[in-house]
Length: 446
Image 1 (cartoon, helix red, strand yellow):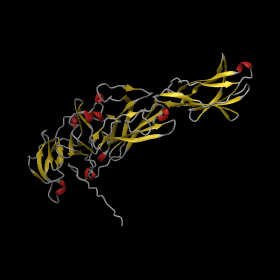
Image 2: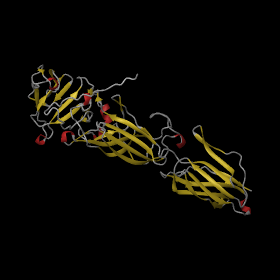
Image 3: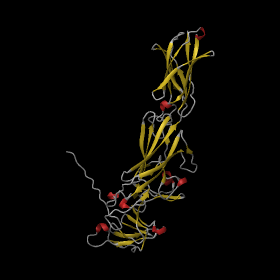
Image 4: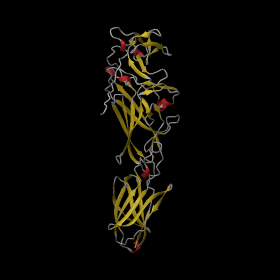
């Protein structure tokens, strides 16, 4: 007999009237606050309310004043930016516990100093004094009737050398190589209660797609804010937000490649040279054939989510260029028979040419060449010749298999001078413009 479990999500009232009607939200958990020399995560939500708005506790308990002097802690809940506050240690009757008796008013929303009171709001947060602080938009089901139908926006993506979260940032332009930090400028648009505001995002993820092979990697989840811990220093905050473009209001500049795992921020990167089947910080590949992200054209897409899973995304197309291109193999056929088969393989940290015993060809023979490259090549940059003693024969052909294999045909001249050893000469460039590291085969004409 199977057991069916039901999870009941309870919602709690808003701490200002009307208690069961959705209000606006102008700041969310995890938003950047403070200044770059003293950064911190926002520990709750901001509820826009005019100066003098009555504030109530959602639960019954004794008031404990905050150390800042403009708020109070009641039960597990914080109410901050208040004036005309009820006396400390007052036993409060909360909204959740009332039947016919009105709840206890604990204070008024204070004048926060913005022009025309534009910044006046109640800060509401959940969690013990030392943290962790929980996301009020999801804790116990969130406030009653909260809803948000607006979409987050990703304004821009850019790429930085790994370690750019520190004091010496280095922005990179395509083509990219090595270990990369991805930065995205994002904001969430809120329309809770019909009030249009902007906040930080709840969650970020990024997806890497190879445009040449259609292979995809990810999506990799990074930033997420179900709760925050008060940091001992600014480092966790500055691994999420860019210190060189730090802001305490949306939009924010996020380091997308630094994930938050179990509420801890990790300093990571995208290793474009990563060896296949390695973890994010695993071994580097030595050649494209070993690489999870072989050189070529890629799309990096970042998606931002709010807590209600509304999403907005943006992508940038880049070239990866970690390796010098080379000829991987050359096969020569005469009438379907293989007469030359040379391929390059790793030997230690270098390459060696493996050529089994090959046959020769004769003057006047028609031959077919199949040349495989280590990566995607520029379709307009290819020249294949047979060369000997100042003479040459052009090989005419075409690309196939997404510009990694080229096939062509030629006829050996029917001249006495054609006898002897001919070089197979190949010149080309990869899509990033790197000149081919030539690997020349030898074909004997008799």
